[in-house]
Each structure stands twice: as C-alpha cells, then as structure tokens.
Amino acid sequence: MSALTVDPGPGRAHGWDDLVRLWEETDGPEGSKVEIIDGVVTVSPPPAKDHNDIADEIQRALYTVIPRDWGIYQTQGVSVPSRSGIYIPDLLVVPKTAMRDADRFVSADDAELVVEITSSSNARHDRISKPAGYALAGVPLYLLVDRWAPGGPTVTLYGEPKEDVYRVLHAGKFGDTIHLPDPFGLTIDTGVFPAG
Image (cartoon, rainbow, N blue to C red; front, side, top):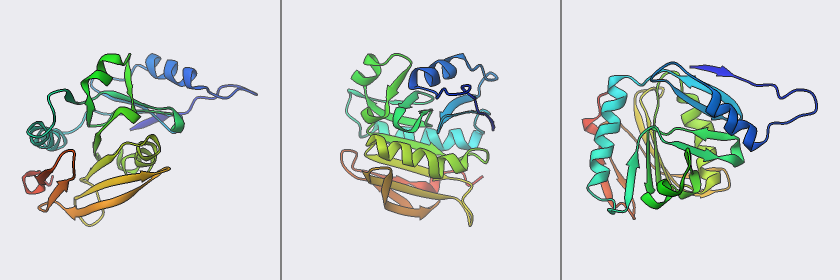
C-alpha cells in the first residue's frame, strides 16, 4: 500500500469537497483500490485470491437472508466526512434506494453492514481507522475478517456503535461460527474460509 498526504498550502485546510475532488482525480494502477483514510489518500493493490474467496463465501451467505430491496456491493465507495474519509469496504450491505440516490459513493450512515477483510498492507486501517469511522457514522454492524491477526486468522463482529467506538459482539478464530444478529439472523461458518 502506498499513501499520499496532500498539503493544502499555508493557511488552508482541506474541506470535504477538496477531499472528494482529490479522490476522484487520483488514478491508481488498474485493479487497485484508492481510498481516503483520515484525510490521507491510500492506494492498495488488488486483493489476493483467498481474500476474494472469503468475500464470496460471506456474500453468498448474506444473499440467503437479506431483503430483496437491499444489495451487497463490492468496491463501492462509502463517504465518512466526519473522519475525512472515503472508504471502499470489501462488502457493503445497503438498501438499494441508497445506491440509487448516490452519486459516486454512498453515505456510511445508510449502511446496514460493512465487511472488511484484511490484507497484509491494510490491516492497521481495517483494525483501527475504519471501525472508528464506521462507528461514528452509525453503521450498525462491522464484520472484520482479520487474516493477518497475530496468533492466526480471526473474525470479529462489532456492533452497538457509540461515538467512534464499537462494542465487540463476537470474537473468534477461523473455524468458529459467527452469528450476525437481526436484521440478518445469520450464522456464518468461518471453517470454509481459506486460512492462507
């Protein structure tokens, strides 16, 4: 992952419109993911095959329980202005009306669930910066699949956001099951996830 910090010049601070323009004008290599995290442009390489396989397993499970008027989106930009961020989660569950009303990205406060699957280059952001942003925006559930956790791969479900902090609803290792509460009511078997 690479990062670009942009200096707005003496006496000027970046406003939200400046960050959006910067994000729109940043041209990363094909297949890469360009995000703004805490006001810093980050460029990540395309995810590895195991990363994509985990996303597919979760997405398939989610499709069995979500309402028809919700969608599951990969690589969809999500705005988090309160944290100077435009994140691109691995999976985003959001009502389709929010997608239809969106321009280039949807507002994080429209999300029902966000899933991030760590890569070696972005694990810190997925563990610290993004949960703070999603919690502050009021995203009800944040699922972190941490393939690079010290001690082996883990899965953590966060919920009940208050300010920029989540409560841990469940924490386990690959091989455990994890239950997503209502409105999902879904148990995911992480034993099908490739451990890498």
